[in-house]
Image (tube, rainbow, N blue to C red; front, side):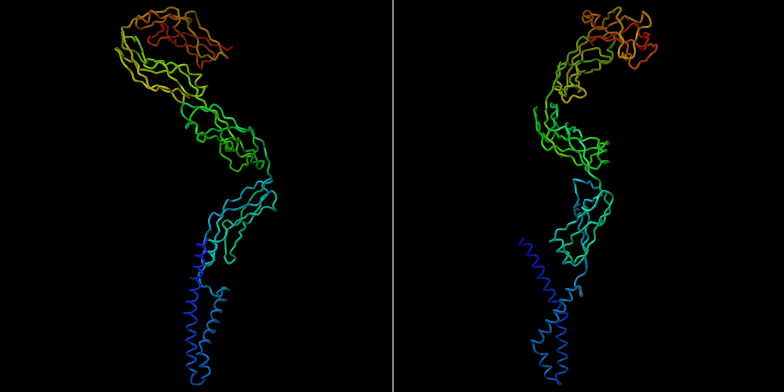
Length: 457
């Protein structure tokens, strides 16, 4: 503050010195010379006038009178010693005055620009010393549309000013309130440790009050508590409390509505973090046909099981993790290096790679008679299916592979079926498909197509 006052004093000191020099050069010196000339002219005629004009006291009084005259002229702006300038004060906050409990007002600008015009001295004071206030007085207005002037306190009366904008159109609505159910929106879940999941989020209240005018409240589709995972700083499973959780109102397009008053405006959230896991076997699936006369004897992965991490609903539906290997044209032993593809919804796995060793032997075959055909993926709520004839109820299956494996294979582990996905009422010829429990063997149906009749229930 002392430094600031010192600057002000220096400014006035320089100002008075400049004024003194101007007065001395423009007024005092020329007048003194003029009086001396007049006195010199009348010197011979009138000695008294000469003595009067040459008296130092007389010159001082005359100079003082001239200085006072110029001072009053400047003070009354008869003489302007400085040019008029302008300063723009941008983005000055506007304070609206109205009954916020009873009304909602739309159209109030947040800021306005103030253009000040006047002398450098006054502009300097305006910028440094005063608190500029813009107000919008709506206290005497009722609901409806109004044009209102923005008021400026203008502490420096000697300055002219303009406001941009200076007049605004506002709409006043009666404020109403509604109760809304509060839901939760969790952000940045991908920033959580891959082995952790958010099991539940509980808020300290289930409903809030929203306030605005009737038409605006009708456009509010939801009110959500925004829970940011980053704010939890969670590194392990447990229960975390998050206070001052922000509440946000959204319209039907999901756009945030900042002009809705929410009471209360924050809540407290209790977040439960768990680490659900499930260990499932790895199933290696050969893709393609091995070389003629060859068959797969063993398929041995170096990892037989993998632990999965994710939410409980996702893990519940996963029974195994499949890894495919390409055996097309394979005739001798081979070792595969494969990446384990993470199932959908799984956040993390204990293993991501597997080494699979495949050994080959000579191929043999064996036929299994009268394997029953089943109907798969039919909409049984609407339809029922049956074979068009007796020959279409069973098939013979040729199985190829290593003799030692074929000898242990039971026909109950062979499945013959037709896929009736998206079939409706009618008679259809459908291809027969065969699978078995041992993926080292190949299965082929002797009958490739059967006729199936589908009727409504």
